[in-house]
Length: 117
Image 1 (cartoon, rainbow, N blue to C red):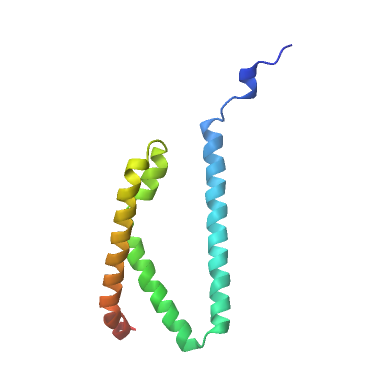
Image 2 (cartoon, rainbow, N blue to C red):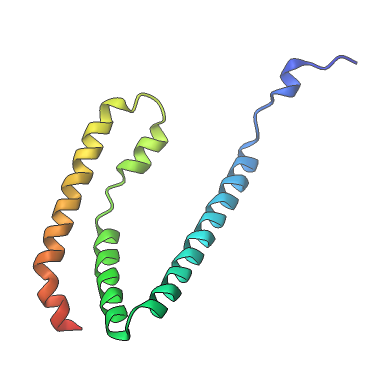
């Protein structure tokens, strides 16, 4: 019985690819959360309670603004896969402008955030 070349290079089924992708996403999220937890423990040991509280307030403000300002360009470029070069400059420019706007919002709202906490 001869082995056909097509049998050796059969593409994976969609369900197997979805399961493998799901496992990778799950593993990366667990690793990310674990590293964040370790970082928090280290900072809690190194910083004074007052400084650790300030760090927590700053991280809360940054995470909140970042959550509400996701543009989706990275996901769109990854999904497109082919011929993304014309869009890279636009995505970079929008990302840079987004960073500047976030900085201005955080800088101008710092007194309000400080008064709140």
